[in-house]
Length: 230
Image 1 (cartoon, rainbow, N blue to C red):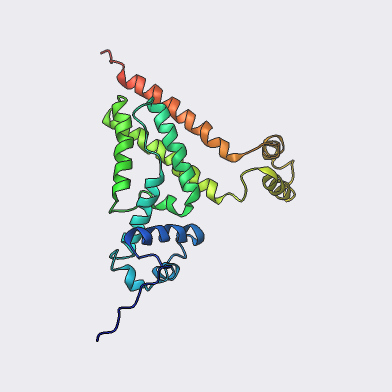
Image 2 (spheres, one colour):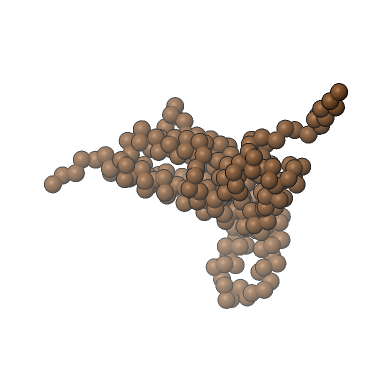
């Protein structure tokens, strides 16, 4: 009589591509990509490194899938509102998403094998601009400008030692002790009259910059649609 098959541990979730990628995102959120290894991911998932490759062929594919999962969290621009509102909502969603996953910012446009969420996202943003009347060339300018701002702001925000509140006040106070007001009068003025004021929050600069970009793109679109006289 053959022995009865071993029962699976009901408390251990079944390994799958989706579970590997979710585990990868969670691990990267905790330790960043500099310390991210397949061995550490396998340990987090209570399995062996080679077992992961039964579901996803290599580390590059795992990272590509993780980035695709991040793209899937970003709100797609709606076709039901003005293009300015749609792009603004998408930009704010992207910034919020990248704040949750700061490791992803430098990887968002670096992959050579984008996943379906990544492709869907890019197609939707391009479609938003094109449906609003942007030419191909102006769409390229607009997309590059908006994303450079989003990724740049996300990088800066993630690396600031503080962005507001008492923590920022304490940091500014400590830093100002190391230089003379006579040497840096404008920096001292800016710090005292703005950064150290109650309610200061660096993250609010995002909306200010985004609005400037949208105003500029609206003006560029108007010029692009205006017939030229010769």
